[in-house]
Image 1 (cartoon, rainbow, N blue to C red):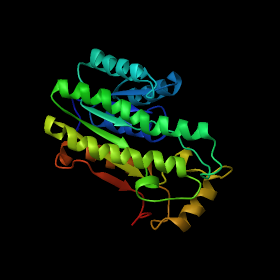
Image 2: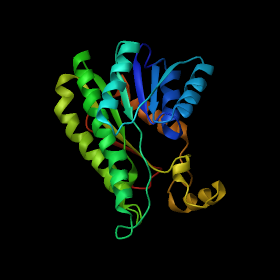
Image 3: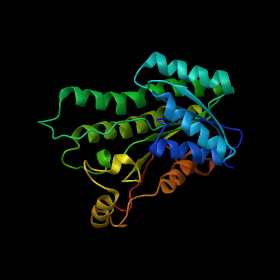
Length: 250
């Protein structure tokens, strides 16, 4: 129960890694607020947490819209009195080689993956400074700061920027009690790890060849990593990017 009595916000909490993280924090005692643009997936995450005996709430918001993010943080504190941990997980996945990718797709990728994290941190840090401190974990990717894959230029650029932003902000605010780190997953068991037209069996065979560990990551594994770096067990970890990728970038 490392997060008993704490309030945790997870962006992109309606599916995939975000939903797994929300459930993981709730199992360890947190009151979890999930956010995203679509209410139905958020409501399902809340239902799953409550069915497991946890406490959860949902607030719809668009992390690329600064006033909306400010409203989100105000609602979290208004409903629950505090914000102790924020996990910035919301993002999109875009494919296309540099000369071919549509410029609107490029802009959307940077807006969702980089600007969304910037705006989230901007308002989260402000609230945490007023509240005496807190923890922020930004979900980046092995693709970007650690590995390049042809056809993923926009995605890699957006995620590399998240790591740079994380490390800079970590130095700026640790003196005020706001501890900031990143976690960079490799392929995990979510739709984002699937290639177009690929089945789960196809993915398993591909990753068996590509990853030293020989398999896709389990959501419990990335959840354990994020919960650790957000916990008091990692209070001396500042400005770090924890890579969880089955040896892909070793």
